[in-house]
Length: 348
Image (cartoon, rainbow, N blue to C red; front, side, top):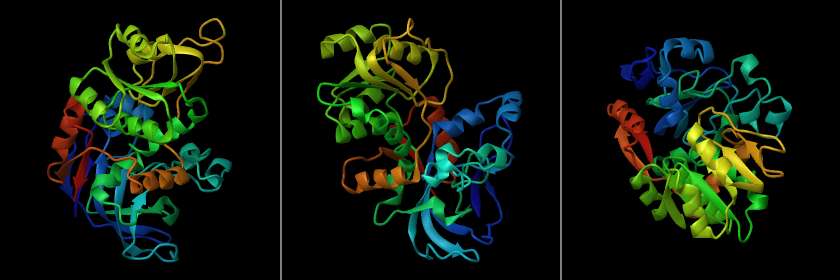
């Protein structure tokens, strides 16, 4: 079968012929119907060899793709909870299934995954950018039903991650609140829709790219402004207030963290969702009272079901551009260059 694999650290991914995998006991094989390309993949492939080996050490070659949907194609011995022919979505942040967090469906926060070397598909072992993929346990599958696989595959991360991030601030996002979304690309444009669907907040989009700001307006942002030194003043002019209720930062670079801090007021949430690391001042004398900084990761299995239900209700969708497996390296090049409108979807 064909698969898109990361083969050599620092080199572009390659389309390769690899053996079709067979499910072992307790496993499920999917015939992949769609897979999503994500900045997390681009981030990993952009690391130099020393950082990659020291910080990640994913074995290569590795089939990419941690967003996946498909049709159950073959069952390993003992699997009874899904059937051949079921349309399913893959829950990506795999855990041990036994710790306290996993017992709540929060396998994204598994307490033992690192020790047990459990990794998400496409981020540590073979993922969804292939004609077939192996799922280690059927609990990592949720029903897709009649949802279009290509239009909805990205919800497994680009929908689930912002949904989980926003749910942590829902108690504050009541009437009169203001929510700022920094970075309105693949995840950010979904976050805007979720904020509009779940809250009465005024939603403000901030980005360095005019095309992405146009997308933000198209999907429901009340205001869309360039991310620069003038942004706090422009936001104040638009809202009539110096601070905002919550900032959802899908970049998490030093400049965007500084912008979020400048917008924070009493009890504001600064939520760092992007794959990045920078410095933020904390403490009673450094931030307004009860202003928080948190960095959520992905989401729970139950939340993925909720996101798919929002899609069924027509309340959230993902802007997509389709690519074949042979075109997948080009999809990642465009992702890296920032020229995609929304999400790149690979259709085997």
